[in-house]
Image 1: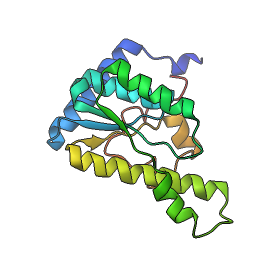
Image 2: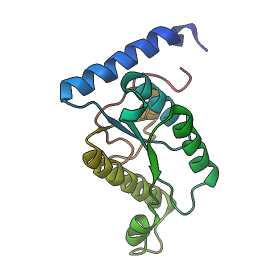
Image 3: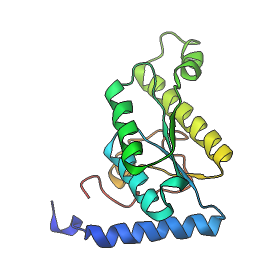
Image 4: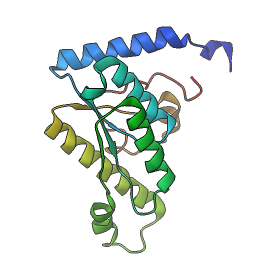
Length: 168
């Protein structure tokens, strides 16, 4: 890794945990909702939120689609269990398929964007039901590369790791 990208993990974790705590408090919340995909970014955000708020105040949502790799949901479930998070699985297939069925020749990019936006609808609905804020899991590398879906995985109340490159 380039020296310019080197961070002190303990200092950075403390800074992010403080940011999460302060921002939620200032917004009048004490709970967070995280879409736990089974990947490293959502696992990191879930862990940071757990450290900031306590496991009982972080709700993990697993949001698979019919073609999602079952190992991803299994990994997401393991993250939630290891962190002690309340969590549930919500299959987005019926919601996404209702839109996809209207245009059978739809390309995979459009389908992926629909899936991402369906996930965000569920996250925001569940955050309202649970009185928490949706935490974003995107990092700086994804943002700079444009690797996100507007009003999908880019939609959130807070982005705790948005300043970090993937390698950090």
